Amino acid sequence: MAYKLAAIDIDGTLLTDDYKITEKNKNALKAAEEEGVQIVLCSGRAPFSVTPLLEELGIAGYFICHNGAVTSHSNTKEILHEVGFTIDSLKNVLDYCRTENIHTDFCTAFDMYTESLDREDVRAMYAKYLAQPKLVEDALSMKDTLVKFTLFGTDAQLNKAYDELAAMNLPLRMIRSGPSYIDIIDQTTSKGSALSNLAKHLDIPLSDTIAIGNYYNDLDMITMAGIGVAVGNAPVDVKEQADMVVASNNESGVAEALERLVLGKKQQV
Image (cartoon, rainbow, N blue to C red; front, top):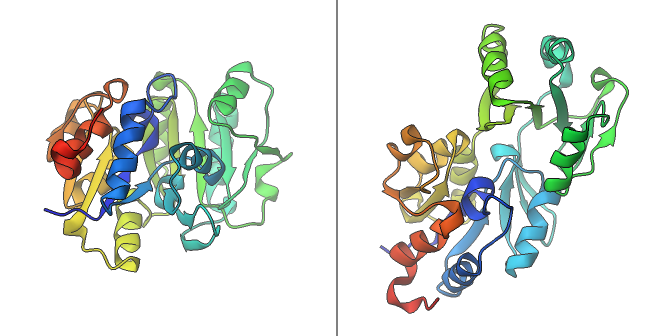
């Protein structure tokens, strides 16, 4: 099979636990691109946290961010696809998070906002993702279309929040994008739907695509792509739905997948 597009999650997949790209992954990505494969980073991150990684890799092109809510181009900043909602639909969620001391932020296609940066753990989290959210006094004053609303807290705190918010029957979709995060996005939004739209735009059959990920927010693209790959650090139930399981994010699992599916013996590491 001559695959033409590889959609690759960032955190927990492309990056190691200390947020680095291994040389092995860098070499494999460049080699795959030279073989004609479109490399598409596909993340819950915002554009300002994705484009520096593309620059580090020396790769330009389309990327998917906000868990599928926005597809853009790293050079032109063109927005190919965007799906959003208004903050009014999340008033009950905001009230809940304020009561439970769960930090929140909310994003338009290119900007991030939050009501507070007082907590040290919150500031450290944003630094890790190269994020500099703008402060607003009241989220409900936001008039712009939002593409993602995120809860940040402990795993136990968010497990409880997920169940209690699900009982509210929100008109939006909740997904766990990591042990410390719940993302709320449009009901129709997913990495899988964004991958499908981008592949159609590029005239690439889904059967000719690869998706590599590690968490529940990656499942839609893993099951939709021609071949879905889970890295070794993925939860068991994510691995069970993948077509292939490779080494962990700390062991250059992305490089292993590309070596097996695209590069064969051509890749030298």
